[in-house]
Image 1 (cartoon, helix red, strand yellow):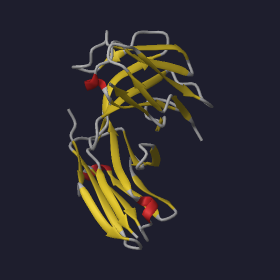
Image 2 (image 1 turned 45 degrees about the vertical axis):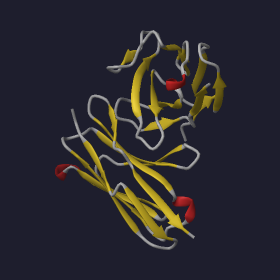
Image 3 (image 1 turned 30 degrees about the vertical axis):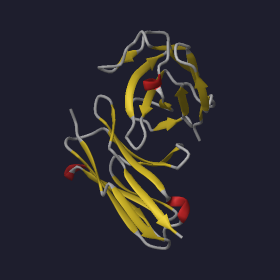
Length: 106
Length: 116
């Protein structure tokens, strides 16, 4: 089946810093989503982005489907950005990467 | 936007008892819902796909007699953990699509199950 790899696995940044999270997938997919799981376990839908670029405030995402990767950009990080960021792709089923654990220091 | 409500958010039960978790789509109809399990510091693992009006499809390694899924209406799916054991302690999350097969997934807030 399709493989989803996220990098880096862990990231610690100072408040105000920018970051780029990467999601690689091993085969063509029908869709891709980025989620943020906060420290209480809630999964928040960030982007539905099978291709192209989208922006929402300090966050933006780009998916290059032909090269099988997606990037999530976080600018001017805040402590509330801490948590785990997952990408999930859909082949015949929805497959999650292992996530990037982000910790923003005040 | 599409809202998925999951209840309860936390539950503690004794070994051998059963626990029911509800997942509701509040402002859309969901013919298909998904149940995931997440162990600490791990990713979400799909347990089963719940189809309204038919039997659920379970992933390999998931015991269908232990994790009973019922999807009786277009807005409600339930997961019952039967004869729970401490190793069933986990974070269970449901999700639903608000549209067709390639539409975005929306997640409930999860249920943290602790079996003592």
